[in-house]
Image (cartoon, rainbow, N blue to C red):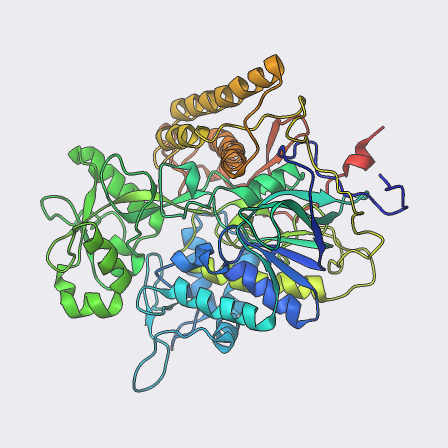
Length: 602
C-alpha cells in the first residue's frame, strides 16, 4: 500500500487495539520497548554504534522488571566452573526442550557479557580482601555461579547502572507509555509502533514512534494469574502486540511458578513478595507444619532441585496436609547473616509481621516467569522483518520447558548484545527477515511511514474486535489461577478455555448489538492483552498432553518424549482465531518469514 506522496503508508494490523489515531509522531532508527536489562542494553549498544534510539517504557525508566530480580545473574565466573557445566545444568532444567545452540551461545558469551556489564557501572558483591566476585548457588546449579549485588538486590543494582548509562548517553526516552501495536510498511516490514503516553508532558495521548527496527523487551505476563511475583505492569503487552502483528509465539504453556513466594493469606492478589532461591542456596530448609523436610528423597538436590520439582513438591505436600502453604526455615542463619545477605527479603517479611530470624517463613508457589514467548533466532529476529524480541518476552530456546534459576538476566544481556550487533551491522541488502542471510537494517527514509499512520479500528468504529472492560482483568486472573495454574488437567483447561471465550463473546455481542465497546484506555487495553495471552497459554496447555518441566498435567502425569519432545507454535489469524501447531521434533527451527498481508491478497 502506497501513500499519495509515493512513500509507503504505515499500517497497523486488522486485529489492532481500538485507539485514537496518533496525534503526534517522532522518528528514530531503533525503538526499544522496555527498560529492563534487555531493553537498556540494546539501547546502549545501538546508540554507541551511532544509531538514533528511542526507549519506550510503561512506567519510569528505572521501573523495569529487572529491578525486582533478587537472586542474581548466572555465569561461569568461578574457579573450576566452565560454560560446559553451566550448559549441562541448563539442559537438565529445560527438560528436553532447550535449543542447545542457544544455550551454548548463552553460557559461552555470558561471562564476558557480565564483565561488560561491570564495565558499564554495575557493582557486584565482592570479597573484601581479594576483590573477587562472591558467588552463590541456586536451584538446579551444581556450582556456585550466581553473582549478586547488595545481598539480594541484584536487579536493582543492574537497573541503576544501566539507567545511569542511558541518561549519560542522552538516549531519547518516553516514560509512562503503553505500547499499542506494531506499524508496518507496504512490504510488511516493521516501521515503528503506536503508543499511549499516560499523563501530561512533552508527549501525551496516542502517538507513534517511526523506526526501521523495533525491539520488544517488555518483560513478562505474570498478571494473568491472581498471585504473581511480577509487577502490575506485566500484562503480556509485548506478546499480544507480536501476535496481532502476525509474529509466531512458542512454548507459552511453560509458565514457571516460583516455589517460595511469601504467603500473605488466601485472599491476597497481585504482586507478592519473592523469597529468593538464594535463601535455599545458602542453606534454608523447606518444612511442613511439623518441621519435616519433605524435599529430601524427592530429588538429589533436595531444596535446590530445579524450580518445577520444588514447586510440585510443595504443592503435593500442601495437598497431602490440607494446607495453604509450607514453610521456609532459615532461623539458623542468625540475625547478622539475614541483615547482611538478605536485607530486602528480611524487610519485606517484617513488613508483613514475620521475622525470619525467629520463625519460619510461610511460602507457596506463585506465577513467576514465562519460559516461552515471541519466537526468535539467535540474533533476536522474529518472524516479522524488522521486529526483534529479547528478555522474558522472547522465546530464544534457552529455557526449554523450565528456566534454570538466574539465567534470565544473563539471557537478556547476551541476546540484547546480539540484537544490537545485528541491527547496527549495516548490511546493504534488505536482509531483515528472520532466518534471512545477513543482518537486519533500519528502514530507509523512503520506507519509513508517512505522516498519517493508520492504526486499527478507532474508538468509535463499530467493526473489529471489542475492548474488554477493566474489571475483566480480575475475571481472567481467577480463570487462569483455577484452570491453568501449577496443577492442570484437560478438564480444568477446557473449563478455562470456555470461560475465556465467554468473556470475549459477551463483549463482542454487545458490540454487534449496539455498537458499543469498552472505552479505550490503559486498563481496557491491558485487560484485552491479558485475555489474548491467556487464550494462547490455555490452547497450548490443552494441546500438550503430558507433564514436562513447569507444565504439570494431573491427567497426564508422565513425560512423553516420543509424542511431545517438540515445540508448540501459535499464530493469530486476522479473524482472531488461533493456529496452534507442533514442530516435527525437539529441534527449535529457525523462524521463517510469513507472507505479508499484501502478498497474500489475491
